[in-house]
Image (cartoon, rainbow, N blue to C red):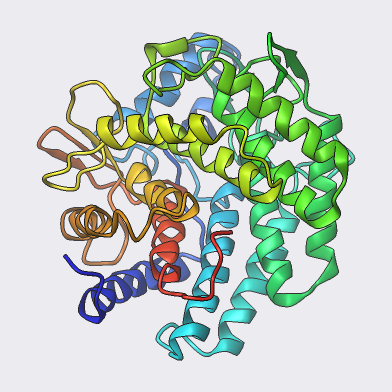
Length: 409
């Protein structure tokens, strides 16, 4: 499928329907992991204080084939990471429209207004837990097998996407407040996250409340510090980015795959977290002018592309082991990964196939994308962050790939 004007029109039409749905919902919605926001669950003290009960409850809501949120009184809300994805997506969209000389998604003035609105909203969602610096968490309590994070606990994952989005907003609006919040968030990474020593370098903790080495999360910190280094040329940012990247790459498997964390190792390797790792290493390489990890990226990319996708249909699978779980987060993240690794043109036909499968099979007539396809069953719950903010973000890079003057930033 050639990347021609006909296909771009198809992508624009799909993007427009998605953008319209998200705007009508005011970028607020449910999340796969928001079960603990249930007012019914929260009203039972002996349940909400039991770790196993919290874990089971979250998994019940995530894996149920139907949406349990209305009967169990889970309100829709703003997810800071979702808002960051929307913000980055609209920044990309504005650049695309300028290059394409079109107003398909509104005038330049209207798009700048949306960028400014989302940037201010993101700033307003900052966490006020455990840090004097700007940082972001989720709008729900979160219980995993490894640890428990109360609502709004700042994490490196949410904060990393917040930094990227605000830097993009600053490049468009030149509003110094957005830059200052991004710089402040870098201080959160440097000063508030714990550091886990490794044979080579160290890893950042997931949040200030734990000492869990989650490898993709560490590399998201690497990516953020690399972006900040490009702006400030602060040597400490580059040094910390290098040491954290080195720690993860030292533990990369010989076949190019990456373990997920110290806790689960190779028992769990998935598509989009692998893509995070590759994109973060590429960001370090580009922003810090250092090719130390070039080979790690090459072998990692080969493993990712050859193990997580059906090359015949375009399906993006969740796991690298044989299975049938398709998750739209994987396809959405794959697009910016190809883009940032400078491989979009080389893999253009496959990207068209992958995005075409997602649009044809997983987009509802109302514009939103479905959550997952489990075997022959499609889970159609309209989550806002996952996958719809992700699809808007990912598809914006698809459109941006047509900018001949746009660097892979």
